[in-house]
Length: 248
Image (cartoon, rainbow, N blue to C red):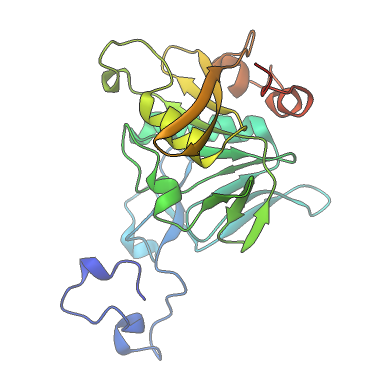
């Protein structure tokens, strides 16, 4: 089914490339491009260079950056997600893109990198579509990677709170929605927020249902700031590997 079917009510949602596969090729219909500032962006209506403005360059449905040995270091995937083997680059992407597009970014921290989930359906105060709209989920303590069609272990989640107007008290903190969502979805796993005032907060919880939180608590991330993450001064993956935040 065409993922953009709701935009074309005059067509059947199963009408591949407008009924003309001889002339048209549309592997995914949602593609990557570089913006005027050189950043990689993903948009629902980009299928070729013709859909872009001056200064923007069409990339394609997927794109990979490799090191000198041919290993993929940054994988731009077909749904708008990006896998970074370099965690600092991932946090940079999340923070800068959140501010560029005024929408929250959500990442899943693995032992060997960070998967930044699709953000083009997110809003300035909600990162849930990154999971809900693209088939990603947390199951039995693991993360379901929709693109790889696999279950993977993970260390924590991290998302941005770049917009102070979304907090009534103008005090950066993990919101009640965050506590309920991540305590239920990722019990016994830290959920971390990058805040608009350069602070980084974290919590961990356990629940038996969405409405029954057994406990949650804030975790200590001493010395950690957004600046420290985005400039590579803090090894968050190593901290998560070597610290048991479940202890009360």
